[in-house]
Image 1 (cartoon, rainbow, N blue to C red):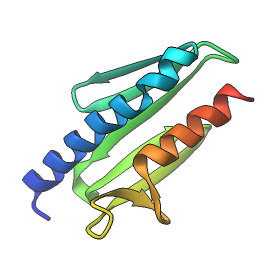
Image 2 (image 1 turned 135 degrees about the vertical axis):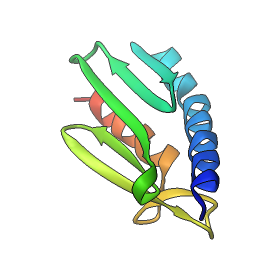
Image 3 (image 1 turned 180 degrees about the vertical axis):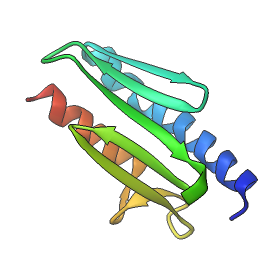
Length: 103
């Protein structure tokens, strides 16, 4: 994949992720900010926390920093999304957010 293709896919994926998480944000004390190609989830409850979802162009991955861990997702042509061990970006981030919210 070219750098331009990666950036386009990453931008589309972050936009899709933001839209996917809006209902969760509405239900909980959660802010979602997408600025300069980086998506942040900002929690006040049950404890203050910030998740960061950002493209890493040199390795063509999307990195998720959440729950004191780092998750590195690569593009799957078959699934047409970024994924880690078969779990799609939207599913992974929603699962991590729900884990934080119930902790």
